[in-house]
Image (cartoon, rainbow, N blue to C red; front, side, top):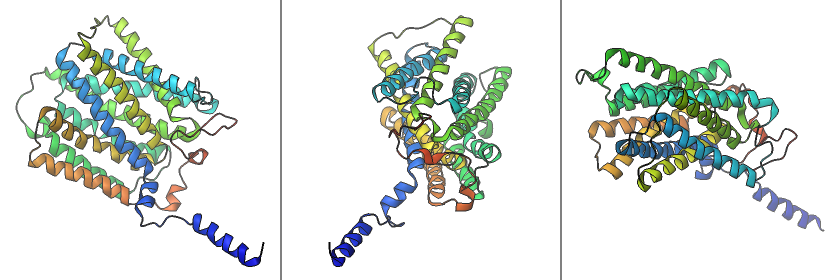
Length: 356
């Protein structure tokens, strides 16, 4: 081959491997894949919550039953997918992170149950605002435990988004809409449980970050669903809660949709948290409030008022603010995770530990 041909071949190769321009849409998407995955997961969580709301309006099914059915579907789906795609160590997960996987499953269940319990004695608006303190707690825990960056910009963006949630929900506690119909003792216990739920949910997110990409996302979800399924079944038996079976095919359909939407949401959320620092990624959780407003409009025909629109704009503004603000390289290096172990959402790479 002539020298000229070699130069032409080298030039063509350089053109093919040239990095994407920072200003291009493709580059922006590539840099924010984790945030996009988490934001999309919130849409599926909203669908799941909508189906749960429609189901509880039709039947007296207990929250623990919903958790059991949802997690059973998620667990079966995880096992089938991991078996068919031959994910290594899919039953127990890689040895170095098995303890973290058990911890993730346990705290995940109690965080989930805390939300349902608080809704029994708090108004939806109060519970919503308290629950959405979790992103800020997650950022603080990520900074303290994992030494991840949690910048002033992320704190301010989180407060902006939280103010949007307050404006949309307009909790009774803040806006004094009248006395609650629930006993004060139950109300205070529910508030305490809700705040414990925030800490537990944040701990679950931090555990996912600590696991990193040393375990496939589905392995983490498998542990979570299995632990939640077992604990909810034991609780139903110990507390002697009567089991209500679906009354018809509509109720069965709602339960099935709860399971499928929950599975998709967990897969997207776990995959997203593996790619972005906890404090930054948690800001995308506020997107659920916007998607819930949209679903209420589509399903119930409820049009948002001017305050809800303002709140949604604040939430979206805070999320965009976080997305366009990049972490400094020096701070990013402090994250003690092994994110370099894989690059794809479901792309498998065989390693001695079987991690993905």
